[in-house]
Image (tube, rainbow, N blue to C red; front, side, top):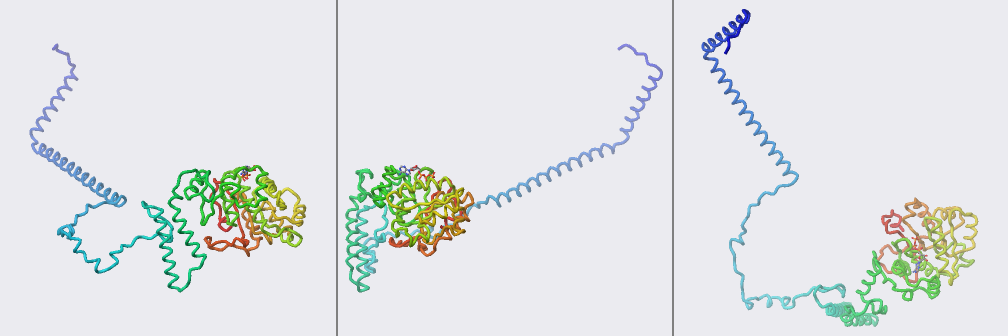
Length: 439
Ligand SMILES: Nc1ncnc2c1ncn2[C@@H]1O[C@H](COP(=O)(O)OP(=O)(O)OP(=O)(O)O)[C@@H](O)[C@H]1O
């Protein structure tokens, strides 16, 4: 290494630095306690860090425990059950015995005649057993029970009771060969040949479903409906070859004066479905003349809009052709005085929008003193459009003397007049307000 020239000040600086280093070396040699202190400090630091790690681990464990407790509270916890050994498992007895050792038969005669579940009066079947045999057995049991009851009460069998019983027995004998027969389609069968199964297939074919009790059979065609010859002629004249499904289902119900809520798509023939039973009902009443026309119409049809009311009027007039029944329509947008005048001249049927009809009633242009048949066409829409108060107002104007029995299972007297309500509803609007419940 080549020698380097150092100035005087540089040389001085270097000398001072050297001296300082020497002094510090000397000091280190002179202070042995300092190393010990350093070591102690290091040890303390280590202990503190170990303590911290331990605390952290403890806190972690506690957090986990807490989490488990929360899980247990919300998800439940299945404690493994301790299996308890029952005494019966510990000591097993053998109960094998010989048939001859069974004394129960001698003790009680009941064991010799094991009792079979009996289907009450021929209703229902047990699965997996011959249905025909079950029917026959049920008919025999019913006969025996009735005979026993008569004997107890000391009464003789009435001829009509005997006839009914004979009929049941004959039906039971026939059942086997009759109900289970699948030889022909229902459309090839006469009405009296239709079996329960055929009716089921028929309803499925036309997508007819009901909700209600004691329902009459649907009608398969116009000829089998119980409509009068005049109405049948009018139906033929209208060109209706066969009834639509809603007509098949609801006309027989309407003819029995049952309240009906008919649910079907638009254009499915709901109008004829309620008009035909309504006209049949009217033909049973005395003809409208000077004596009774002041008491108002026999039936009222309410519709949400003028157009629908007019459409229903057209359809109704088609069917009144051979009956001489007068139909008047009362809708908004026309002179109310003129409508009042028409009403005073007498009519059997009023087809109206609810607002205008209530107006007529309030102004005494119309009365409903002998109206027991009300049809609410598109009842759902009327409620949606806010006509409920008007509809209720019209219903309130009708006589309340011909209400049906509260119990809907009770038979209706065919000869009596009952207040009847028919509603037509679109399938998409099944949730109606309380109005239909009170209808
Ligand atoms: N059985 C039938 N055979 C042939 N045509 C029919 C039959 N029933 C109804 N129609 C015709 O079908 C059309 C629709 O019937 P209708 O107006 O009664 O249906 P709707 O269900 O009341 O419809 P909307 O919901 O629009 O009032 C009418 O022109 C009617 O004449």
